[in-house]
Image (cartoon, rainbow, N blue to C red; front, side, top):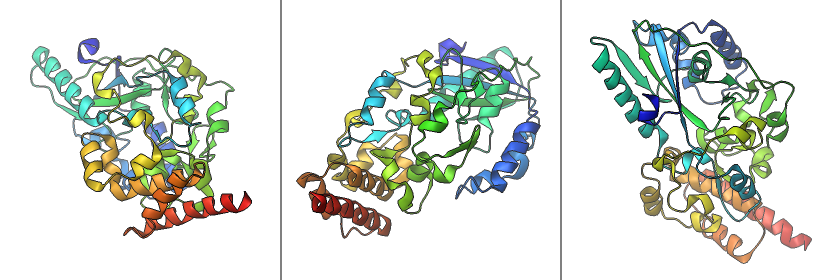
Length: 341
């Protein structure tokens, strides 16, 4: 059934998340969630599925792979300072829409075999602890970078859930296989993985370029490099991803040349162009101003050239204060480089 729907794995978990709830509380107490107040807004409903959806007995967790090109291409992209690096998950169609439609079909297929059952589908769209649930369902273990890892498939995949009142048999969780490896901790550009299995989101490039609505702190701007939407470093250099499978899902094929896009070109997009080309994409959620602000930092990290400086100068007086601040910083970097030469 999972193959028929385009899922690469499916498992069933019970709803006992006591240990995950303790870890979540400690993480929130340390304020590692930054401005993501929604992480604490729902109390224990995030860690107690039956409080979120009364009657829930089991959670069906599914995995869908999304990596379309070899990892080496993504790693090489980080060295192309004139080109934008966009997290691999966001290059194609918005995964929320893809998985949600497949989960609806899964629910329908189950309904054809079992009448009168209750369910709710979730794809990163409600207070759900998707990774602990997927781990309990046997889809992998939570690695030191806090992403789920499968021994057979690495970590380049999306997760989705069906909460149900069916008393299904549960799958067995797998053990942790990170061992003594600390590749993800060592490679993180901003040292956001402050300890094994502990992520300080306030330092994470994905948080800084997607979730935060504030100017990117100066201390992290150089570390962003050419990353304008998210960061994949902890996955790109994880040894388990040598087992990652390439996705055959057409919806995850990169759109509008974003896999090889030039920073100057992207910075010149009008809002109308951006709205057109971000339609149906996860990128749409950050808004045009955050898009420009992120690119401005990347341009500040690019090699100095007349084209780069001219692109930044055209946005020097942009209406959004954060964009202006980022542009000003970027121009200062190029002015300093010119002075040194």
